[in-house]
Length: 326
Length: 261
Ligand SMILES: Cc1cc2nc3c(=O)[nH]c(=O)nc-3n(C[C@H](O)[C@H](O)[C@H](O)COP(=O)(O)OP(=O)(O)OC[C@H]3O[C@@H](n4cnc5c(N)ncnc54)[C@H](O)[C@@H]3O)c2cc1C
Image (cartoon, rainbow over all chains, first blue to last red; front, side, top):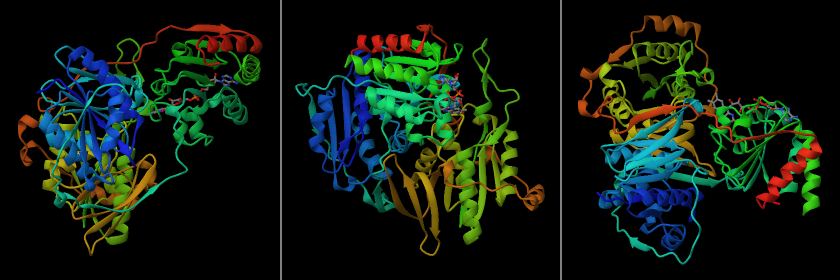
């Protein structure tokens, strides 16, 4: 049993997904306590050249399974590849992004290697012995539970995109790239892809934005004004679920327990009351500025700067200030 | 074709409140419902019943009162119902739950299994894939359309990702997990309500299935809950009540301080 922490490196069309780099960053913080290496597990077809990106983002080692059977994601062939690497190297823990792929693959592997898996973690801690303590929301975000996996290894968890922080990208970082020869058993493939269609109307990735202008029910009827303010400040508009329910935005803009988890440099919460389910998705933001008419609104408990007032009156003034200082 | 649908009884999380003193869930008086994704799974199976005369059986694991959702499922049109219940199952995590359900499903018999993607009380989305692994059958998760070609023993489904979808065909036995947006579940039928009263629910206990007792319940669960809490309020706030102009200045100063403007 090693002390190493593995991170599943999720690539789609040979592009590594941000969440994988975030998890490497988190794994770095964990091994600083527990010891061991941070190792990426990179799986796909024609992907070996991506391994150095994984190192530049903080991995000590990258295990690469490059096989033509792995051109498209299907559960069984990816599970075989990752399981082979896990069995060979016996890591202490393994982290997956809680994407549609991570949440499909991780449970399959956990059942295969007989170990515990904790879904959608928002916080990870480790002790010097390498025991991982995984915190996740339950009951729609009303409650949080901290979960351990004392007797089985690897300790596995999925973590949502946007929750953890990357480390600085450094092309000079030293790391080892190891090619793994895995025999893939194609007789097990019962799932045949008839077609795969990319949706170019591409969901907006609010989790990648550094400035989010988030609107709640209080600004439901002020969409144009909010969009304009976001343009002036160079941010992206996100929203609460109430706004999605009202049909103003689609769910790809929703922040919170059943939406996205975000961690921008600045989060404007405007006309948002601050329900726990909303807070669960944004409380890791560097600077939270809340504007709400109601001084008892719960959002002010999470905000770093709380302004009691009418957002529709403040936005135009703030635009003037920003333009004046540019 | 025999379709087994896995359903779960869950507290309606929209009505859950936290007791501010004990920091625990106030479950009293919170209604129990059939988990929304599971209800979509049932509806998709009933559509296949309407179209191809498939046989639909529902399976739930839970306490005896979970019988309620089995009755509801039969009132919607399910043909048979199985209640997997035993004290020995209590405290199971997803690994142990899937071990039990896989063993129960072997006993129930199925050509395909459909379940919801995730339950609103736990939101893990793990039990489906873990059942499939224990049964050594393929899985397709995040499914929004299912059709079957019985002659060729093939299911054709649409699977969603964040940025794309796949149309896939699966030959032979398989497990699918579906999303609640995929259909509009039907209401209970008056005839169905009357019919289900006549139908018996088959109870499956630990003695009826082949499982290693070391792999189930609290002891057989690899994961253990160490503690639970609700988010406490930290007051790191600066709360300011000003005119819009002044408020704008304060915000702009803060943004400048952080080098954002
Ligand atoms: C299982 C579950 C999951 C959920 N998941 C999510 C989730 O992921 N994300 C999410 O956001 N919610 C989620 N919710 C819903 C959540 O509980 C709240 O209902 C929702 O966040 C409320 O949205 P809101 O703050 O925009 O609206 P409201 O609560 O109605 O608040 C509107 C606020 O706007 C203020 N206001 C009005 N006019 C102005 C003005 N001119 N200027 C300034 N302030 C003004 C009001 O004072 C008020 O505080 C979930 C709920 C459940 C049960």
